[in-house]
Length: 540
Image (cartoon, rainbow, N blue to C red; front, side, top):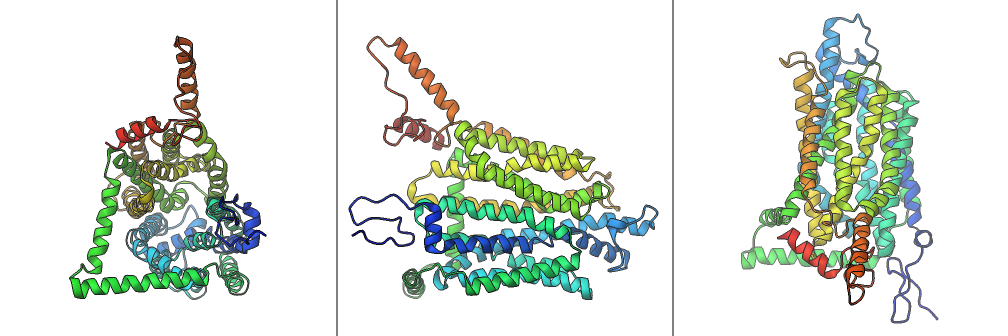
């Protein structure tokens, strides 16, 4: 009689050979992991209900501060013959919002998240996943409460930015990924992580569209009620994914690590914690810069991070300033485009393009799409043009997973975690600095007291120049850097094989790469010796 399978075991049978992993849907149902997905969908849809209203609320708040009439100025409905002081206050308020948002992103991504996110992940290993899902839900309520108090009692919205610096480190995404990894076998995890991101894309599509149909106060109350309902669901229905054995093992490792550090510090004169952290950071830098290929990929990744993150913090305020009548419903359309196009690109288009073109060419496509998006947005004079640019720019989201794939395929198995961790750290640094650069450019070309001409599209021209630089760097990376150049290289190899067979007087030539060749590309790309030689050349 066959032994029973355990969650995450991969379904090994009682015989010596491992059985095939269970189907994804079957394992999701058997382990109870399916209960996470309705929670994520409802939770993210709830907290995005207020998103279409936030840019306008923030603009009105800063405009009221500038005009000396807090809570009494509404820029979206400002008449054409409004006093000059009100018109200037609304114009300058857009730059104020972008600057505050950018400084928040800088402190959150470049300082707080780098420290707190790994720490929270470690604590969830010790105490379980459910408590930290509840913590994330509780943190999501804080900015909603601040907006509610502002709408009802005039509380300062500056607290909104202060709170966002700290709560952004409490990510429901990372806890959700760990939740699924606890319950599912290794072969089904990648597909499950894709389902998690699909839930977020659907929520970004549904939540803002629903919120745009509500007034700001109702949307805020609905968001708070949804999060409260999700917290009850988490308490009563969602299972704890971390097993008792895994929790005990994690606590044992934690205690052993503490004893080791304590003994080194007091007995052997070991380095203090800050020096260990510094050594880890320097090690990550060495990984990112250890070869010409890694240096180029790191530079490209940081350039795209600066542009994409700068765009996110600036986009809505820019369009509200430049396009007449750009209101709440238009903001919801932006997020619907983000959600719909992001879902299409990540779940369908990316896989097809990788198989057809290979990693290096897909990266070029992503960078070119981002460059064209920047140019379209800089010159956009109508809403449909802006929406077209945003839709096209969704292809740019392929850049980070493609760079991660190339680096992973050119790293040893035992250092995969270190490589991806270093890459995430560099991306976080770019995510913090990019919005600041865009914000200062936007303020310099839009504020009434600036000596420069009024040109709000200046940051996007700067982003266009950065994308051209990234394209130039990527063009120097060989098409086989990811391990396989896609079907283009495979067709070329087949033609070379046919030519060799036709020209050879002794018989058919040895295939350049096939599925049967150990270590070669499973899709018929480079063989083991060719791949080893190519990687050695890239890393030299």
